[in-house]
Length: 310
Image 1 (cartoon, one colour):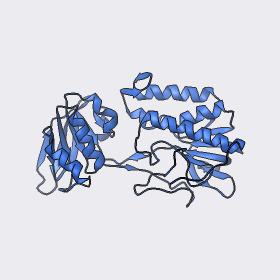
Image 2 (cartoon, helix red, strand yellow):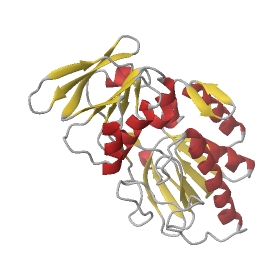
Image 3 (cartoon, helix red, strand yellow):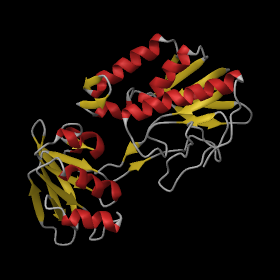
Image 4 (cartoon, one colour):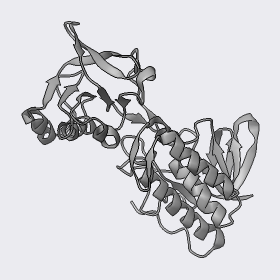
């Protein structure tokens, strides 16, 4: 019987492991091969306090610190989490463990463009987070792909930094709020291309162009850009969870309160898979700390699990 099971080893999960170790909880961190999570995809972090540099180097520091504080680590994946009384966690190859509390922080998967060059240039000019990486493209030519609020707002943010911004959407109409779309249309730095779809990312070591194709006429254009921002959404999976353990919003994110509590006492979630709107390394790390401190209260009986706050 564990006090705490942590599922995922991004900034949230590794921070949770550090705090659990310091609190002397009997804990286990379950992770697949992607230790470090989404932060690993960023080559130049400039907004994490006290650190500037590659994402993988920062996550390696988290990893070493987590190991230092003694949280057990299982390099495997979770197949199912249920709660008959205590939490039961079924791992790959049939192993089962039990725990008094669980923290979910396994992140989310970006929706892929599925075009040539996507994998090659991810982190080399291709980004899925305008908020994170827009400051890296001052006076550069850039393009944002997507039609929702994140895409249009991203284009507006880029326009305050970059030399030029193309906004590419496969439909004529945007899903984003009308007032936001109007702001983009009035911005002199933003050129809107609809209905166009991206078909190829070009470059050598880094991005140098995006090829787009008109949905109806099949006309192709090559946009000379140094930055490509894919804002077409993310996929958050809850398949491993017993039905009814969590509530999700309309885009599939797990709903938590300010203490990272889900609707099930003792089950916490933090980081990018939650409804926290700001997907940032520093915020995920903070949520991992909060979730562990709350789990400690549940385990020790110093505080009741509390009511879920919608």
